[in-house]
Amino acid sequence: MKIGINKFVVLLFTATLFLSCDATRNASNKQKGAVIGATGGAVIGGIIGNNTKGGNTALGAIIGGVVGGASGAYIGNRMDEQAKKIEQEIPGAEVERVGEGINVTFDESSGVYFDTEKYNINAKSQETLNKLAGIFEEYPTTNILVEGHTDSSGSESYNLTLSKNRAQAVTNYLVNNRVSGGRFDTKWYGESQPKYDNTTEEGRAKNRRVELAIVASEELKEEAKQATGEN
Image (cartoon, one colour):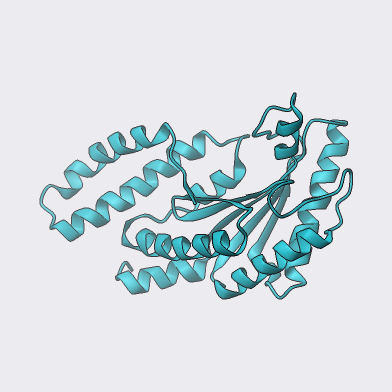
């Protein structure tokens, strides 16, 4: 499991120290931890949120839902459990724990594969999505953003439609396998958000992907507040 670490962490750490200084000067250790946690959540949300506009929207969705403080730590522990479960049951998936959520990427070599110019869920993809549906059932207090992406081959309008059909196919399959439709948000971006070099075959294959952002539901956030006494 990868942990999302990037250049914004340095800015986060510095900003957190400044913003939390006055608030924690006369606080107990427990109070300091809560203030720093909440401040860190706000800072990282602002920093990464501003740097994901038009970029990685799955990451933006995760960071945008940051709670921070003791509640955020509670949610993070739940996400750790779910991320490990996904890694164990779907070893081909790229699983990254980010903040208080999980970013999961499936490409042609990692479990959810679409034949060229197709968007039907084939047998190999069904196997992967059946496992994923079981995990989502086991952790019912998370919400899921499903994103469709393509490489740059073909026209921009064609790729946008193809990514839409593929993202909706994944969402529909999971909903038809007992996962509540109210937990899903489905988006599509065609070729506009490549992660890899589209001039190489390997890069194009990786860009033909479905990406998931798994975040806390309002129910889980409320549970975290009750469990930690942050009301």
